[in-house]
Amino acid sequence: MDQAQRRASCRAAGELTIVHVSDLHSRHRRHLLETVIGLQPDGVMITGDLFDGVQSPKPALEFVAGLRNADLDVFYVTGNHELYRQDVAQLLDQLRALGVTVLENEEVAWKGIHVAGVGFDA
Image (cartoon, rainbow, N blue to C red):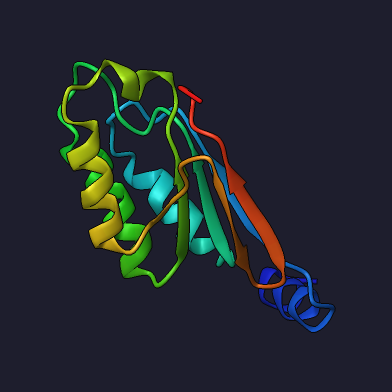
């Protein structure tokens, strides 16, 4: 069974494909973006350390924008490295502007399941 057939079979069975990403530390990894998009997931869960306390946030924001441009649902929760940034509130606003669901000690219903996010500082 090839990837497309497996994907169609999972959808018919009501299954979800979710990709988990963490610890990018403000780096944009083009091959990772291409791999995630190629998996055709229903959603992408980014669980912390998308940003780094030292590096420019631009590459990480470009990675997320690439996911959203591929029309993927993206969920995000902070990690410990976000705590080192003075601009974390602005970065969360930028993620929201891209269409990312930022979870700050909350849960949301999504495609028949509940997605919860507890930030590192909670």
